[in-house]
View 1 (cartoon, rainbow, N blue to C red):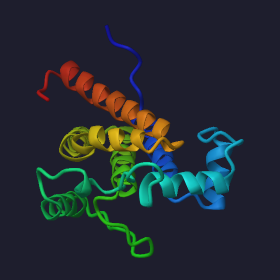
View 2: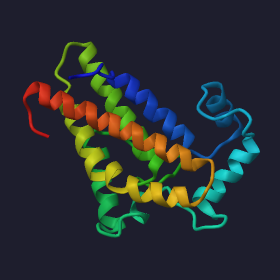
View 3: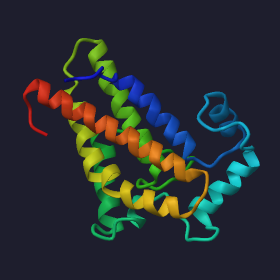
View 4: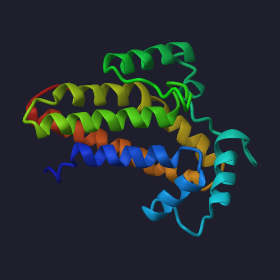
Length: 193
């Protein structure tokens, strides 16, 4: 009972769209998101900006839901999380943007890294190579980071009662679909998860 396998570059594109969605909504970002059908065009850029601030920075009727993994995982401590993330990024020789100055544990940074891993997997497969190392990295990164804090983040985000509440659900569904794909591929190849 296996459904159609989602290609790695499709997942990569979905992660990039989510990264854009959880980035600060500039007029250009808002226009791209509405043109792609990700954000309802009746939600103006100014309204989306106010929703972003209420959801992630200042709150409204509740506390905001910070976009940083280390602020949702008391179990590991932020320093340990940052160090582990930097090891992931350095292992794959990826560099953080020097212009954006986001922390390694920012949701957008993590989503962009997952997108990059997916794109690398697809590139290796297109050349007829073995992309298992990139799939293994995706599994590890999702398990150790994104999936480790996404449930708490979603609960806090839902409590903000902003437009971003629904986007948290969409992100969770994307991550679960990705995990399912990685799990199915492991089972089909006879490997362990």
